[in-house]
Image (cartoon, rainbow, N blue to C red; front, side, top):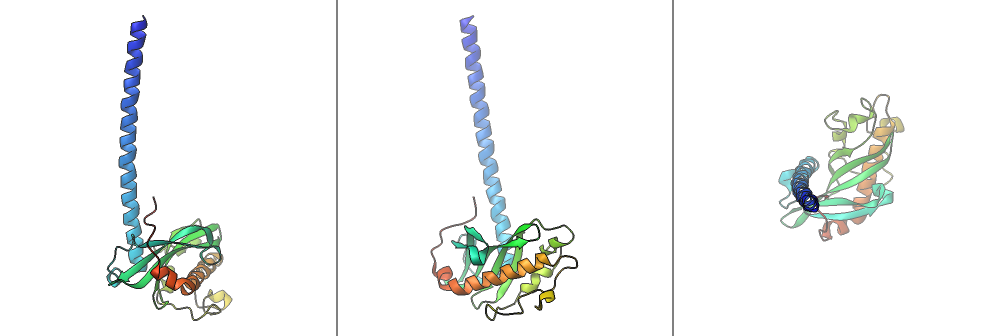
Length: 211
């Protein structure tokens, strides 16, 4: 009887080891695929906010950590991707957060050329109302493209508001809070860039695609 129990125990133990190995291999394979997909998605977004033909480095790898509760909307580190052309910085894409969206945080990435001109803005994540606030997504509306080519004259530039507040940016019918939050966040990101331009362009790349 003892030998049978012992034999069954060994069989179960072996079975458990085999299952554990399969799970581990599956997890590793899935993890690599997820990381690959995240990198591809990141590249697509970066190419939307900084023209791919304007730089010649591996943009998603040339990344530094940024942190500013005041201007980037979070006390946690966020990423800034520096575009180089012949080792000369030409633009940067900065992750930022609009903390005052209608339903909470709106995660954005803002592309800014070396001269301070906005090259593109995209929404990364949000919880805004479908059919109203979600017009900040490029697949839902072209509104987010209204930032392209814009320049902030100074931190008191009154143009950087929605039209309801006397500025130049359209608001959405029935949803002013969302575009107002995004406009303010993009403006704050430009201010951050202007105040930290040297640090951003000369900083050592220390981060990459999120794991």
